[in-house]
Image 1: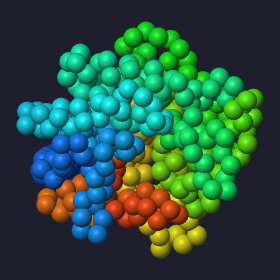
Image 2 (image 1 turned 180 degrees about the horizontal axis):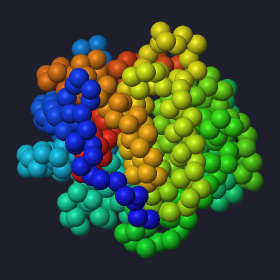
Image 3 (image 1 turned 90 degrees about the vertical axis):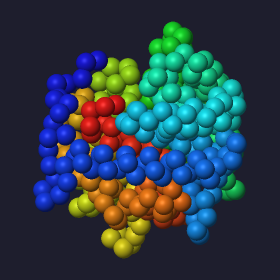
Image 4 (image 1 turned 30 degrees about the vertical axis):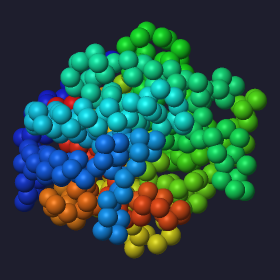
Length: 386
C-alpha cells in the first residue's frame, strides 16, 4: 500500500526549540555510532557477538543468543548512513557469524537474528549472496506454527510452576517480518498466511480492552484454546510491560505495511494512542507502565527506541503528525547525555539505561544491543533514509 504523502525533508528542516536540529542530532549520533561499533568489533572474537556491558566488562554471546543479529544489523544501518566501506566489511563479517542460526529454529527468535542481519544486508546492498539464508530461516520458523493455535510457538520451555504448553509472547509479532520478507523473495504463500494468521490470533487473544498487551498467552496445542495469560518479564501478569507494548505497536504497524490489512493498522493506532497517553514528559517509558514505584523506577531506553521507530512509520502510514512528534521527542531525549554514551564509554554501546528482565534480575539498567539497533533505525526513519 502506498504511504500517505509526507515530505521527506520535514524532519530535517524542523528544529528542537533551544536545541540542535534533527539533522545535527542524527549526524552526531551516527558519528558516535561509527566510533563505538568499530571499537566494539575489536573487542570481539571470531564467533562472539556483544550482549551487554555490566560491572565494567563487556558481556558477549555466541550466535545462539536471541540478540545475535542486532549488532550486525546496527553495522548495516551505520553503513547505510555513512557509506563507510570499513563499516560494511565489519557488517559482512558479523552477519556471517550468525549463519548457523538461519538453518534451524531453536525458538521464534530466528526472525530477530536473521532479519536484522541477513535481511538488512540484502535490503541495503541488493547482493543475492544474502538472499537464501532469509528464505531458509523463514521456512525453519514456519515449522513452529500450529494450525490449531494459529500461531508460531515462542519457547520450548516452561518456568517451574507455570506448566506452559504452547507459549506465545507478544515479541513474536516482530518475527513475522521474516515470513513476509521471504514470501516476497520465494513466492511461498504459506509463509505469508502463517504471518497473517499469527497476527490475527494475537490481536484477538493478547490485548486487553485498553489495548495494552499481556506478555505471554499460553495455548492448548490440541485445540487452540487459551490456557493462561501471564508475564515473564513484566511487573505482574496484569501489568503493561513496556517493551512488550512496544513490540506490539511495531509488529502491527509492520504487518499493515506488509499485508495491507486495515485491521492491523487500526490495532497499531489503538496501541499507539494508549501508550502515548501514559508516557512521561520526556517520552521514555518506565520499564513497566504499571510499576508501583513510578516515578522513582527505572526507564527502558530499548522500549523508547522501538516505540519511536514504530511511531515514525505509523505517522507515514496514517498521515497523523502527532505520532511523528512523539517519536521525535523520544529520539532527542535518547540522544541527550542522559542516555547517549560518549565515545569510548559504556562498553562501546550507544544507549544507557535499558532493562532486560527486572523480575529476573537480568540486564537491569544496562546497555542492550536491540536498544541501539532500533535507535539507529528510528533515526534513519526520522531522516527519511530508511
